[in-house]
Image (cartoon, rainbow, N blue to C red; front, side):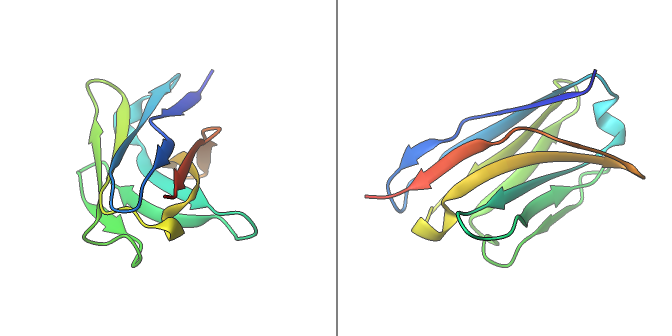
Length: 115
């Protein structure tokens, strides 16, 4: 059974940092293209960052230079280091795995940026 379990969300002040983790199980983590998405209230889900099997990365324009995605294949874990957080970064952050037509989603972790 495939599972993606996110953690690390919470309440943080503007300018602060958080590190999200996504622990995967039930499939061969290293073979999958991994991404973080987020969804703010009343908005569509959007891509935050992605990382390929070789470590190549891609970022949404709004997070470039502030967020860093990484993966540890030995620990079956995906990370998202978020720095210089802004109120616009508030939302539910989802972990996503893809291999061809196979896609899996986590249940999400809430990130709230507020003073």
